[in-house]
Image 1 (cartoon, one colour):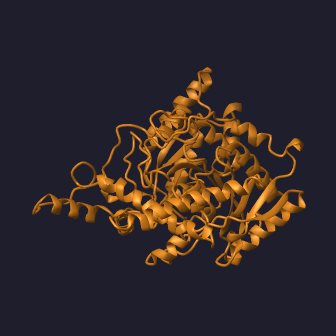
Image 2: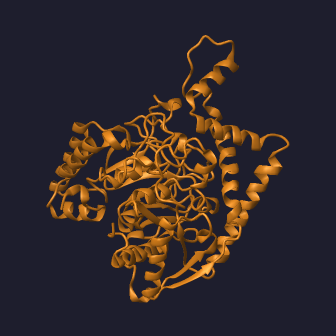
Length: 492
């Protein structure tokens, strides 16, 4: 098998048996990046090839000598460019941070280094993680590997495209309202965000702090579990990090489908199968539901009645937090400073922020500032916060009857580049099925489950209760097996 086609699990097995070396894997990925990224633009910056190969050779030498190795030793990885890295600039795909070189690694990056992975570069994204298409980058538009005329989704579009185009076996992204799961669906890979606080946010440059989460993009549920095992856990550097035991996710996936597990109890929120869902997405998901029923799983309808308020509540709350978080980029303390002369400090700040931030970031800062302003706080922010609680309560009720919920992650397949760029409301509506998991802080995973008539990937989402990552991964593995057995993913 070609090295770039292999999963994390298969690569680790090949490395352990000595049939392949880390240097060979790294070289294959570097060559793939060189051959394909000129068209796709998944990366903002890439590693020096000789340095990456030297790092791989050092791991190979340690392996030969029987020295200690990390659990992911020798595997290349790509990191979204809003996670701090000491050896790469961290720009958030923004002119505002174009020259920022962090003095420290994000905690999840530190864990990956400890696991002996090889960082091949930083991936492109919507500026400051604001967008749904990776068209808002200050540097390039990332293209969908399945159709270069279409978007890869956002904001982790670069990470999703890098995995889908076989440039790396897995990548790290961030998810504020679907930014891992939506591009995973558009690009035909697996994308997972865990419970809020399960992975440390230390070193993740903030957009909306009570929503932002680190997530994983990979080629299978098993690979996702292998990576989550390494980066999950409590971090005293992050005040929102959960001090809860980390289960054995790999074992949970390995045991998935044991007879003792019994059939899954899967809920279908009726609000997510209503008007607005395209037939291109509906058909493969309905085929999957039929296959799950045929295999003996319990599949029933449920309701999340406050869904209709989720999207406006999400944008009110996240824009408010963005207004606060991005206030630090003023041309004095942080970020880009415009060229003078200036008439005063206010002029310098205004020009620096106007030139440093793109239009979408400016739009969300203005929205957030408005909803936090005197006279509007109660009408917008406080009311949206109450909706957030009601959304969480809807899930709590649904999980008394079902193990997990299954529904579409996107209303349509990947859309054309430029199709929604000038219509922000239409663009925001592409997040309508994904933001609800972030509002409730719940773990969610997107799986490729079929193809559109234009041969574009279609994804399906599973959501589980808080801190149920092990059970959710096991359920996702069983659904993944059903998708494989039914041939839904192989049909093109």
